[in-house]
Structures are given as C-alpha cells and as structure tokens.
Length: 458
Image (tube, rainbow, N blue to C red; front, side, top):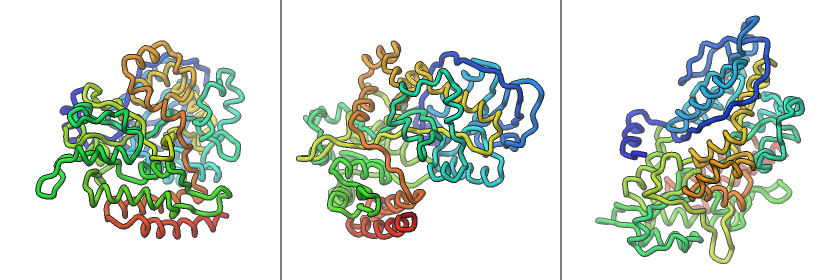
C-alpha cells in the first residue's frame, strides 16, 4: 500500500484502526417469509427505528436487518464489501451496516438501544454480563437446527469464548493477538538479529541501541508499546502472573510478577526514554500515530494487533511473536476472539436472518480470505487448508506469526465483576504509562478497587 496516502487520509478523517477486506463465496440460503423495514444507511449512526423488534413487516420480500460494528479504515471499507457480497449471494436477507466509532461506542449505543427496545438484529460486540441478564439471544436452538454448522471445525478456544453458563451466546468472527512489527532496515543497520529478540530483556537492550536522542530528547524510539493495559498484561502473563487467584476470590495484580513487569515499562518509557507511547485522541487515533511512527522511520518497531497487517508494507517491516522472559520461557500473550451477538429484543425473523449473516461470515473460504487480507486469525480450522490461504502464507510469512503465537497464548480474562477489574487495570496503566507513577503504587490502588468489586459478587 502507499503509506503516505493512507496516513494523509487518516489525518483528514481520523480513520479508525480496524481494516481488511476479502473475496467471498456464495452461502446457502433459506426462505424467510416476513420482512422488517429499515431506513438506515451504511454509515455512521445509531440505527433506525425499523431495527426494533416491533418494526412493521411486509408480506413478501427480504428481511432487512441492521448490523452494528465499530470498524473503520481499510477494515471498515471491506466489511462493507463483505456485507454487499452477502446481500448479492441470496435474496432472503438484506444486511444494512451501521458504522460506529469503535467497539466501545458500539456497546454504549447498544445499551441505549436495549433500554428503548429498538435494537439491531446483529452487533459486533460481546458482553458476557449482558448475556446473563438476558439482553442477548442464545444461539443453541439455531445451531441445533442448522445441519451445516460444523462445531468441531471452529477453533475451540475461540468458540468457547462465546459461551456463557454453558450456552452459546456469541459466535467468533475473527481472532486477534498482539504481535511485534519491526523495521528490517533499522535492525540490520544496528546489527540486531530479530531471531535473538526472544525476551523482553533482549528487546530492551536492542531498543536502547536503536534509540536516538538529541539534547536530552528522544528523536527516534527503539520501540513503541501500544497505549493501554493489554501489552503490559501480556508481558505479565509471560512471567507467570495471574489476575485472580486459582479459587477466583483474590485479586493478584499487586504480586511481584505484576510490579516488576510494569515498573520496567515505566522505566523504559519515562527514565530510559527508549520506548515511546501515544495516547488519547479520537477513536483509534493513538493507534495510527504509533503505526505512523514506524512507517515514517521515527521508531524501530511497535507492538500491535495481528489485524494491523492489512495496513502495513511488508517490504519495510516484518512480524515476530511477543517475547518471553529470561529464565521463564516463551511468552503467553492473550489470543481472543472478536465475537458477534444477536440482541434478545430482535424479532424471531430478524434473529434468524442475523444468524444466516453471521454464519456466512465464518464459512471456511470467507474466514480464510478475511485472515489473508487483515492478518486476523481465521476462526475455522479448515481455513488453514484452504488452497488460497496455503499459497498466500508461503508468499507472506507474516500471516503465520499470529497463528504460531496463538498456539501458546493465554485465554482472555473473563471479568466476573462486569468489567470493574479491567477498568481498574486500565486506570493503573494510565498512571504508569502517562503519569509516571511507580508501578507498585498504581497496582496497589488498582488492587484495592478491584478487590472491593470482586467481594461484591463473590
């Protein structure tokens, strides 16, 4: 891709982070007898009243449904192409894509829609607590009635992430994990073999070697972690740290594994100044600024999503797995599924139509193509045997890195407090990364807040 053009477009429109695109095959279709009108355009917004379960129906014609998703940039453009491909593949369902700013806004607007009982039929979002409260529809009956649903072919760790109390509420759309991207020329100029960067200690040494400073100010960073708690949590898990005790009753985020790891990140960012971090801004602005630094030769590398591959020029950068720690072993970063759900307030006809759309997205050829074009992990095991995918991976080895990392990855944390522990960790990460607060203090404060919330639900 032409990065300068992409960067200019982002600066003008604050385009979001998620990207991709794919070619799709025809899906099997089935007859539906009612139609639900919708006046929403495939653009930004909260959706129309016609998305509600009480919308007027017609005696004939396709069922029209709204699908809300917080994707933008290249990935958002290609999600629209995917929707268009589905709509032309059959004549029973018409999907109208409604774009939100990001995942957070999607959930916020869905919360308002649930309260007003005017919900979309499908949403790229998954909230386990809301599923327990009955805000999402279980998929079990739909799956049982679908003779083409091959449960065993799904990546089981991804499929299991969509279960709540043994019921399948969400289906995985694609998998993601945080990997490392580095400038090949910078490492070569500094005599650094990327194969040697298997530990955080080695990466920090390399970052120090590649960093450039003038008058006490860093002009070129050796590495750029991504803003937020995710990168630092991944590093903690690689050292053996836990968020909760084995019995689930005690918050463990002030243990030595946590304090030592987060303190190193604070030191690298604020004292050594070998690692830089972008934060704040609209939507995924900070994410694109991080990518921009590497592509414009202002940083040697960064830690980002497997899904960034659709926006990167691999004649300049290459990908590698996240490192582990000296004396501990291989890293254990989180690999998680991005999932979609069907709100319970949607009418039965719209729920069935939504199921048809979402299962179409995860068909073997489709999920393989999505992976090829975005770097995200395919959710079907058979995708790896897809002829196009096999040929693509031989020519583009970076596509294998997320898959290799996922093989030894950690499962995402299921917050029993409905997100309060994650919020405490996010706040603590801001204190460390932005405000230069000692990790011990930030994590101690976060642990106290998180433990009180955990005690309420235990």
